Image (cartoon, rainbow, N blue to C red; front, side, top):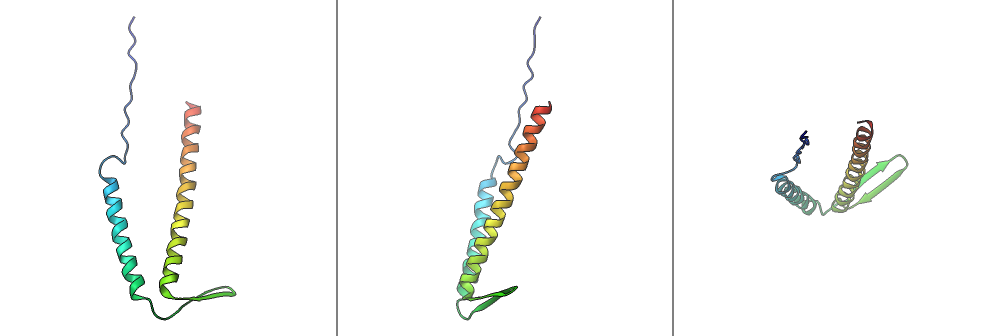
Length: 95
């Protein structure tokens, strides 16, 4: 009596040159942001939110909004990653 074990091979969807593309995209975005910041060094931008208002130089406002955007993206991706891991664990328990 011979038993043949089943072997499953899974390939990562990220294999290949994905990292190079991400680095190029990050570099292009960084250059565009640097140009935008350097062109907006004079004057003040005002930001109003309910009863708060802030007047900052444009370059500082751009940097702050960039940091806020990255933080939101990081938190959302962490939440989605956690949900995906829970779903995978749940499916593994049910099999």
